[in-house]
Length: 194
Image (cartoon, rainbow, N blue to C red; front, side, top):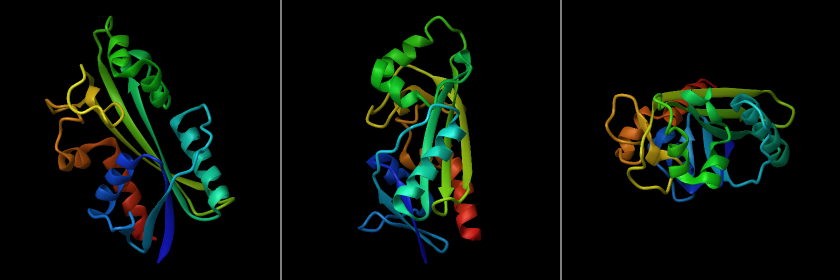
């Protein structure tokens, strides 16, 4: 059994990833997928400016160098169609700078409130190894904040085909349709095939 370190300091993200990957969590926060045990470590990694793919590859290579072994990293984007997919990989900084209402207000004068939630996982076997990317996309719209506001921008993103925001959806439903689920589904297939 090989160990892969999922690098995140976000407790909500960790819970969601473990729930989606294996449907359960051990006392130590580990998850088993195929011949792999996924463990967690929080690292403060530099975030390169660029596309989500470039950001994810850079994070995965950096984490593999620091930890000296197999790593898994994730980067999430929220792209507004009216803004040619910005804020994109900079969504975390937009939320910190202008808040959720500020994001909603940015689209005030635009009729098109559509958006894409994009999640990209990067897996790297170790220092100097190539990075495998696994990406998932969920289309939706930006709406006034509804539901809990404790997980990023979930309360302002309403996925297509639903009348609730990510924040309002039951976790089981969200975890079966989200951008993160779609990326992790591809990652799980990869890990099981190894």
